[in-house]
Length: 500
Image (cartoon, rainbow, N blue to C red; front, side, top):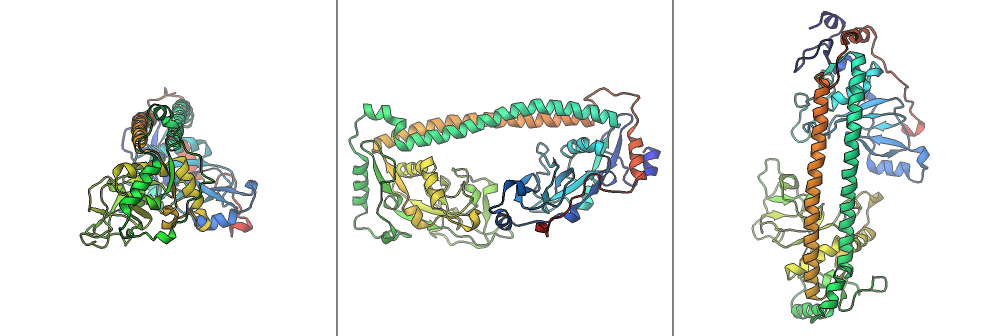
């Protein structure tokens, strides 16, 4: 270890790889000030109340583990800083950022550490370093990884001579800017796919998608005929579990779009043989021994997800034969979620009698798989999304919910059965092609993330730019830092009355 470094700092250390001449390793605690004592979390509901009716000029960014998570009507800090996740950050994913720069006036909750380098010239260097180093030796926790302040101070980073740092950062930033252009193009392509999906489903449920097919294939059974047949099949049967016919309001089509000839409007309650029925949500199992249940995330994307991240074990064992168990072909709606997800539907296509579903989902069943698939597509179309979001209600808009009555009265356009089959075929083929395109975009995005890490690896191992032997070594910088007591570099934030 360099004698000048050892004499000047208690944080000098060895690192995981050999550094070029003039470079040195240093623990983070020796080169930054940490301002975590000034953080303060504010609940989302309270922030919504505080910012209601206030001008945007009176609001400030509210930051968390991985970026801005909202706005607040006050600020705790007004100096440039680096924020690094304390918990909730993707610590073990080398290709995702854990640190980001902030400036101006802002508020930080208790999920991010606030760092200011004691030498402002190394800020950009440290930001890149904190998005490259391996966090595995420094984080702990079973369910949610956490980086404590003590471990934060022990993180080891390489330091190049200041002039070389500037050359490397300039080169990294230039290369990252080129990658960012490609990532922006990928983001635009994703937006294009989302727009395509919405337009496809809108055309599907309005009949526009099969306008040409309908002209060449006159219906032998209309949508109205299908509704009569469904009603006749239900005649004489007891009301399905979870349905009360008196709750179903007459369908008023005066505000609904006009349908093609042969189509008819119906309400969901007249199309089901079971439900709408809420699920069940006991506590999560401590040892994984209880019945398996879906999490809300299992249906958030509009299709079923049965991976481990979307499944949990309950603290109870649900007896076999319980109606809480899902059957293949069940249609699930999100009863409560944020406005953009409430009412999202997904068809359960997993094994029967293995999983139960949570209270924040509602299940319905129909007599045929084709009818279930049709309702699913309508529910996730712009028509269905507008209905669910308009009808949902909740406190401060943070977790709006729909009820079984709202779902029973959901208006569903019914095409002739043959045309419905053609629509579903076309939609399925088009969305499968879109999914293939999305996989390609995801692969390209992953390549971009890997390329960034390769660039940072070359940067912090000294291969990205040529060295200049006349540069003052990094130990000179450390000697200066060791001679000065820790202090906040930059502007001190002043708490406003609204921050108290």
